[in-house]
Image (cartoon, rainbow, N blue to C red; front, top):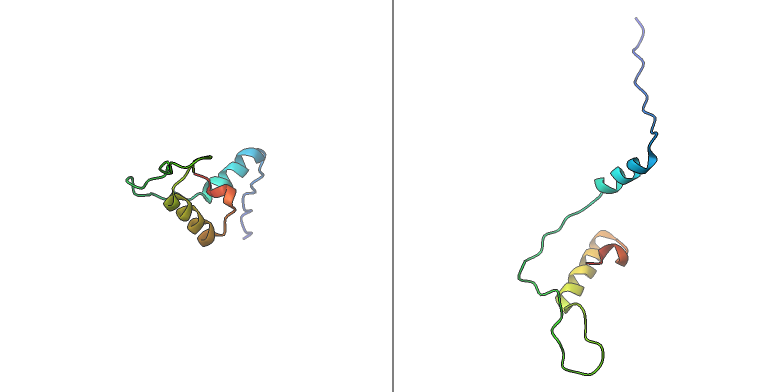
Length: 75
């Protein structure tokens, strides 16, 4: 009795295959809805900060934990 031939998978649509691999490694994190993402105005001259200190610290913590590039962490 001979062994059955295993089916072969040939990827023809590489674009969708690559997107599926990206989605497989995605991560969703939920934050407290009361967390302030926007920074309060400082009242000083010059450009005002865009994000609060808590938002920046959260992003840097995720960056360090998962070894991701800072561009991948942008809110």
